[in-house]
Image (tube, rainbow, N blue to C red):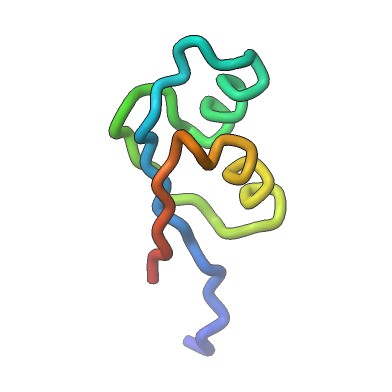
Length: 65
């Protein structure tokens, strides 16, 4: 209860992986996404931020409490 909870992000896939390079498709799968409008809550870490930046044009990202 010390307010030390890691921040989390809600990511929603808004763009299709069809026709994208293999590395972008693999990044979507790594984030737990593979279909349009599918959402996942992930921990906010530098590695996850890097994955999000790689496919940011296919995602919608929101902060979660």
